[in-house]
Length: 329
Ligand code: SAM
Ligand code: SF4
Image (tube, rainbow, N blue to C red; front, side, top):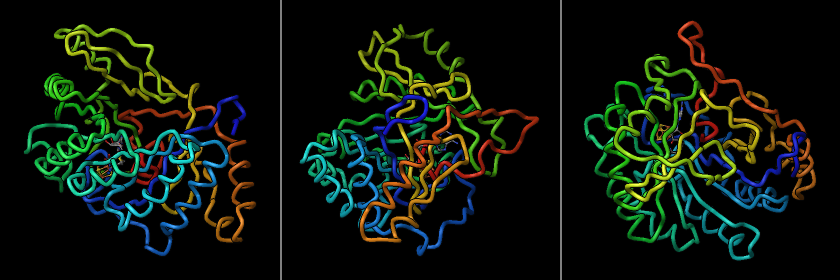
């Protein structure tokens, strides 16, 4: 799949549910309205959709959400999709998770051929963790990370940089992650969806974080790229890798290789734009995949050049109305 700007689309991120057992302050409002069950693709439909993209050249698949591991019987889907690893069509099957259910699922994930996972964790302070996630328990997530590493999964930690919340703690988070052999990626808050707090109060530019980290460590720019928005440095003293995702201070769209599907089968060609294509209707319209395949082609042909996120006090509305939990980040 080649888009109008010559970018090869080889990476699909699928949100398998919009539900979650946490209510992170930058992601969701506390009383979120979720989709009625009838709107959501069945596990069989999710498999069919992913397989259609794999047949068209997707070689990396990431399951996300909402929280992917709270979807009922999600392991059935993952086990099924792992057949594409066995045939070699898929290079990587992975997921992004809040870690709350990892104790239960880590070894089964490893058995399905999952090699690496991203775990979102913004703070190591139990009280702050409870405040940021509203409903989460830090010890459960830490136990999940232990289980994942014990099962042989490589874990990358993703942390959203939040002014006045984890700002002072980021050096400690880095030392902890690298001390356990886990890479760390820092993310700026993106203006997606109505939340209960002001985004401008949360926004912490990573340029500021980087300056503080440089007071303690030697950061060496790394050529490492994943085709995604992160830019990496190697931390000389720890030997670990640190990523920065800076949608607001750095535009990463020129190398974008990915598209996203929601749990109701909407294809988003860009995380920061509203244009989407309905894949559920063509999929349900026939048993064969011709209509689905044509709808995918038509959508890729209009993948936009990039997003235009801004966070300003004068512009309190989010850049896109949907929450990150709809497309999975
Ligand atoms: N529930 C899983 C988790 O938290 O890892 C997967 C879905 S979550 C939406 C994916 C990632 O998006 C998480 O790392 C989360 O911190 C990040 N995220 C959510 N809302 C965000 C926002 N408004 N700006 C930046 N990152 C956000
Ligand atoms: Fe749930 Fe992930 Fe959003 Fe937090 S960031 S509310 S864990 S979907």
